[in-house]
Amino acid sequence: LSDNNGNRTVYKNPNNDTLLQVAYIGDEPGFVFIAANPAVEDETNLYYARIPDESNNLSPTLISENVSSFNVDQLNNQVAFVKNSGDTQSICVWQLNHSKPSVLASGSFGSVQFTPSGENIIYTQLATGNTDLKSQSIWIMDSNGNNPLQLTAPIKLSSTIVCHPFQSILFFSIERNTDNTESFNSRVISEVYQLVYQVQ
Image 1 (cartoon, rainbow, N blue to C red):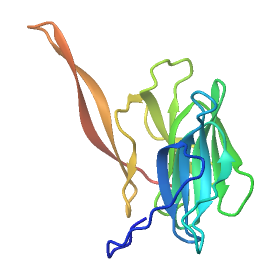
Image 2 (cartoon, rainbow, N blue to C red; image 1 turned 30 degrees about the vertical axis):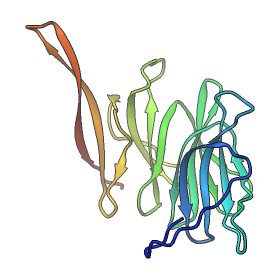
Image 3 (cartoon, rainbow, N blue to C red; image 1 turned 90 degrees about the horizontal axis):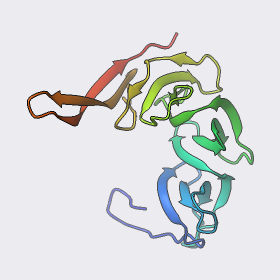
Image 4 (spheres, one colour; image 1 turned 45 degrees about the vertical axis):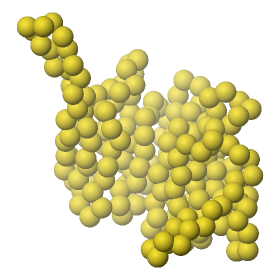
């Protein structure tokens, strides 16, 4: 953890798990992270570890098992994440200092993130029966799971979705195949798009 003056502190995770994604929560300072469970193949779990006052050793608390992605709402100290449960996924939200996450939606989801205000959640959803994990539609809903609204048809996403920090704009890349009829070769290119949305 580094501050603006370049001072750095190294914290130790006693589990020695492989960390896959890390975010910082500043209100009650701590880390939210996904770590691979070495004892169970392909299991990745979501943890929260509060930064201790007089130690560099973290004591992580398990938020949820089998989590593939998460996003932190710094304004409201909450975490949205996608939990895998067999053939389906759930979008869940965990509030800092709450012991149990709440389930907002069930289906086939790719990623999830809060809009900058924390009032809405942007998420991607796979079409039913679609085996191409890149082909996903983009949706938005209230942060409590109400009023889901589809923003795009299924598209081949080749990047994560980025929310503009001050405006209702999303940025993402789409994969497109380009065929060369002369050489009978095809190549894959990515194009960056922006999407302006409006929440009623």
